Image 1 (cartoon, rainbow, N blue to C red):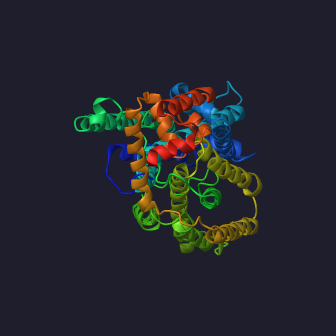
Image 2: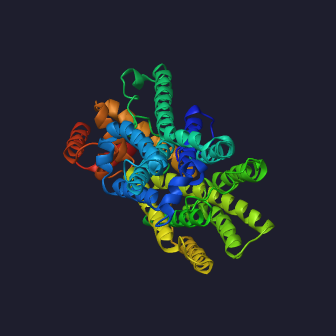
Image 3: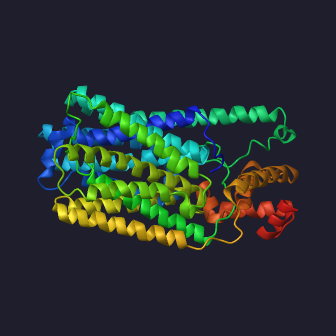
Length: 502
């Protein structure tokens, strides 16, 4: 990611709060007394989490299959989906407290819509962090979201009445969306102020050239990629890591109390377990984020996430060898799997953030692919093992352990591109390329949109990627490229790159 350092900023803080509220919303629906009657009404034929996951699966397929369509529709979806998610939450919560509609159908529809909204909101926050924050800051914001949810859930589960829990859950998707819009507005404002300061000192700014930069679909200035080019081996490694992180998260969430909706765990207790449910998990998340992820920010991809994965697998193995825990061991394993689930959640989104930087693939498609693997594995678990014997569950856990181990070995021995530059050298290199592009754009009088396309071309982006990233048609991108070549007096990309580096 562009800037590796951790710099406290309000955008990252708001993203943490938004991600935390999104998780609170999901957990309230599945694991508090307010929704217990709805979950119990459906549990006789299927666990309600299945339909929530189905919504996530459909949303991720849409992300992967039609990224451009979703980007074009973002102006409408940003208002409609949060309201639909709130409506879906209300439908699920009230489904078995009314007789006007068929309760089961109302609950299924509400869960499906809520699942779509949940992933859509989470993906927006992750994309915002990936495009505007440094790697370490993004990791810190995701970890912050996991920590934020802990005290909120603890208090709501212990002191809020079932009715209040339902009302708060209905409000959550709208509140999450409002926080996101606030974060975007704040990021744009900070960028505008920074450009105004640069305009006072840079000659190009007076001509308006430095105001041009590649933007995300949210209109927020994006940080440059850390690497202009990635090798085929690095891309394969990234895809393998995405699959591993998604499968691990799906399995660990499924074996935890979050795996089957209707289990309230300790949420119904009025004696708050501050130590085991808040202090210890929060401290572990902070240490894990720093030691297993942030410190390895500059490590090569084949080894960057291996310590984190191995630590998560240790927790999974501890749970697997305790087939029938009782008494003190049950309490201990509950804490272990809760912490392991937090680790897996943090790792999953961190890998997605990294993939958004490494892969020359439309951002929506990257998040969609990762979500498809996660949702698909989770749906399979609920359908096949939701009511399975403990032995079958343990066999699947051990099979997952073996799969991850083999995949890690494959990643470790996957050949790296010889002579590839380190991430430390990539950051100033990309920044130099961007600066050179802005200078050339001013020299050859490129328009603002042509400059955006020019910068992406210089960063090694394909025309298909530019088309999706800037929400342009193929013919428009082709026209811009032709104008760029004509104004610069070149005939193809190679001549353009020679001009940049000359």
